[in-house]
Length: 195
Image 1 (cartoon, rainbow, N blue to C red):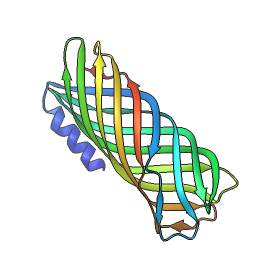
Image 2: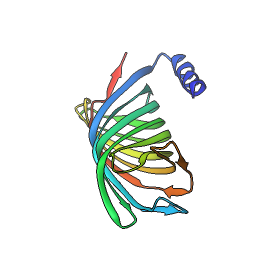
Image 3: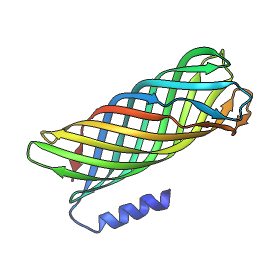
């Protein structure tokens, strides 16, 4: 991962037209297609979550091309169905990935589109009634945004995630489950082209 970031920095730093891109954002995240499948001894059949999402994209803008990293988190609630019983609990999420996109910056309105690959997706579950504490995986996302007056963005993202490692409070892990939720994220951002 470090090699990729260093390579991106070196490639873009040789061009004087490259700008530092910083885009903090906040919004709402809803998981859909939440069925859990696979050979499982825990009895988990459905796992839905939603909540407040926050994060940022940082990288380089060169002409219309955007390159960089995306780091975001979420805090919210989840509904987990285990052996026919539904449990509601607090959930946190963190994602780290790299993105590439296009930015068409017009006078009053701009348009952006990007693709993100997430190396890590982590869900943390916080409820003493359940032994499930964490789910780990990866995924990718598609995003599009409209920028108003060059400083306020309205973004729509669709994430395809895959969780294949479930961690329990006793330290054991379960790699037999298959959980591939999709996420819809709507957010506001402040896209900044610096230097």
